[in-house]
Image (tube, rainbow, N blue to C red; front, side):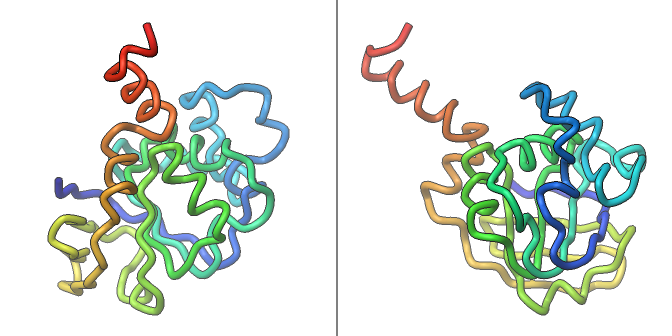
Length: 169
């Protein structure tokens, strides 16, 4: 499943409070959270985002608290994936559990410019910058991580498994 989106590049050490400030944690509604995505980084940031766009981040994206609201806000803003130098470990796990794809590329992130268009093909192991021609190789997602993305997160995956076993209505 390849997809294409416009890049919104952010810096290093973007914490979960920048992604979704605490004052917006009064809901778990993904769309409502998305309306405030990156409000702690730059007020109104989300107004530039369109469905299917991609965040490209520096080192340690998602550091700080372990709030699940951060990946939900990104999803609610219409972001399909985050390509980053590196991710805070708890954010990495929360993101996949919520159904947000993260792709860690190290220093290769410097090949991508803000505003460029990326084509991401996880099954082929490539990220291509359609504006500057850069190609970044990525390892394939583990089967379980790909399943979580395909199902829209852990809750949906578990519900489906319970239904298949006849343990849920």
